Image (cartoon, rainbow, N blue to C red; front, side, top):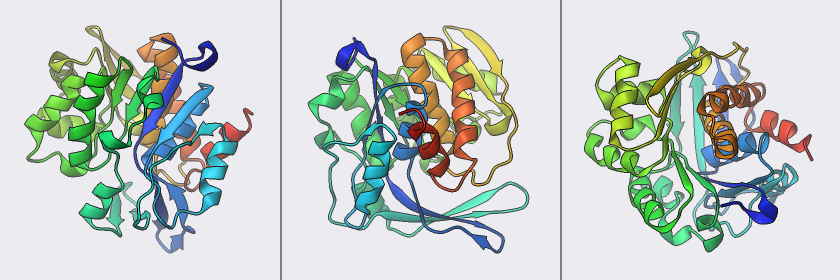
Length: 293
């Protein structure tokens, strides 16, 4: 099916956060982040009808949603929560690693995640739905519910923090999606092997038609209908690598939804990720998406 005016439509489900990046002594000003925003803005680079579904905290500045609207993202009817927006401090280290410190409790993070009661009919009528990393409880509730209530193509991204001890439960929601988009760390942890080809085939056998393992600047591995392809990516200097994986997923989902070409979608996902890391927070993606209007 197709969305309004015959245009394919994608809904990006996830969180909105306020993030600060720390590089040594250099600390960025608080910037709006969250996987839903990164994914939706990246998708907007390739698709006209992009919508976002993310709970809004009590202290989220109205200007945030306005900036997303101006970039072409539909942010109507977002659920509101009576608690502050989740804030994160992301410390980057010289070896390329990073440490996330969430300034909220797990319960607050869960309350600011999306559950079936937040989903409107408009979401269910979309052609594609990207389910980004949220609380484990919300993803376990939401993914099978969406599978049972919509014909949309379901794209699934996870969060590495909750993988250990939840393998079988996560295998269940991987089976419910059409496209699974783990990071390399997530793939290795879940598949219990560092052989990424074997990991991709393991996930594919659970049910998804397409598996894409994200490898940051080393590109991605795409398994589609039994064919495995290594997709390279151009290297880029990162100003702020926060949101790169989310941007990849949004760009991938938008292109894949329209063309069905998983390899081309992976290349476009990498390009969107490079745009995301070119500035602090969502600024790079906001500028790129806004320029399309």
